[in-house]
Image (cartoon, rainbow, N blue to C red; front, side, top):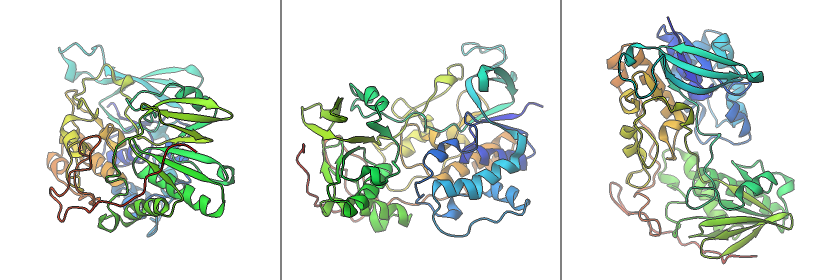
Length: 434
């Protein structure tokens, strides 16, 4: 019997393996890194805004408890704690079912390219793997669950979705970075420009603002592409994840206190290296001088190794079409998002599923418990338990933000399914330049 191949040993990939074992199916997890949750290691300094009970999968807990492990009961772990207290023990419990330094470079059907219909569904998948030292493997699989995430494909600073002129050079020079920085004393007394609008950007702003309070001369500019502040600061007390709501409010207070200059309608066109730092220039000619540039404009899925798999993706978000309408920030008008399962994640290629953050395509707001519910449903489907696959066992917490994103240069649509309509924030906007 061929295994079910799971791509990625992150939180959702490991959870998928635990569910497969519980259902009597054989998992094989292929991880590009040399350790479990390799991407989480890179943001280990960041504290999650979901508490411990919401970042531990049910089947994984049951597997671990048989080894004498006890789930952390309360608190908000950092990425490093999530690994050491849960993900690493889970990977160890799965043993040699997890292979490291195994990069998936292609997925297809045995003896059938993408264009061939005849006998396609009866053929196993063939997963092409590149191992450490340049070796190659071909692994046959009865099904494939892609939980590879989006961490390796951050969205660029360029306003049109492509890298700004000079962005690659700034990255190579160490002036520009992606991901939430680990702010230490080396950031003191310098000017940091943060580009992005979302929870990651708010986290970076709050961390930098704490440093600016202690270290005079530390300057922070927060750059938004949209012409309005809109829902930048989140739902506050209305957010059903209190720490997520508090995050946006901390960033808002930093702006109101003058620790952060907020610039709107700034669409980055080019980033030039200047005097050991960078000049960030907008399409309209405005410019910012920076010592460091932090780009937090979201992530996007990598489908390059799935070119021989028949996918059905939304043209805007690159998410499965049945999921896209639930998470599309262009049209989504309520703060809540329903949980999704196998039916929403299915593709024309039978027994192939994309789960985890990658399933959301370019959309934000993905939560770990969203992925745990996805893999529970998908594995139930693979096990032939259609009733469990269709059953919804999760209600996701409301963000407390009403209205979709609206037109690109206009405020979010008020009201809608939420009442009363949110009141506009009164935030001073900074002039551009030093």
